[in-house]
Image 1 (tube, one colour):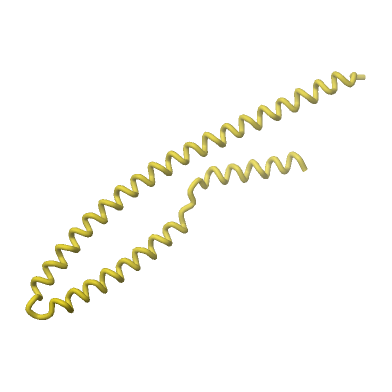
Image 2 (cartoon, rainbow, N blue to C red; image 1 turned 180 degrees about the vertical axis):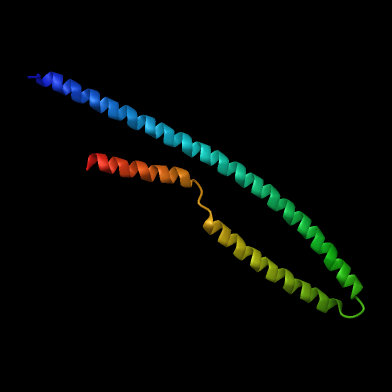
Length: 129
């Protein structure tokens, strides 16, 4: 029969092994999180630059179009033309705001990290229950 010290030694070795595996799993999850954060940052910067380019080009184009139409219709009713453009621009701003809100609600940043953490949680629950 084994002595108590041998059994305690074996138990301590098992605990160290479990601790090492949990630390390794934690390191892997941290690496995944950092990788996803870097990818999200790059994606955000790319979207921001493209969005700013679209806004700048659109603003210049719409300003030129508005000026051209107002000049062309100056003799008829310049005030009415400006009101019509203001209403059209306001409606388009509301549509874009709604599209932006929908897009932000559908985005799931760091989904792979959270999925992996959920799997780890279920595994740990199975082990200890």
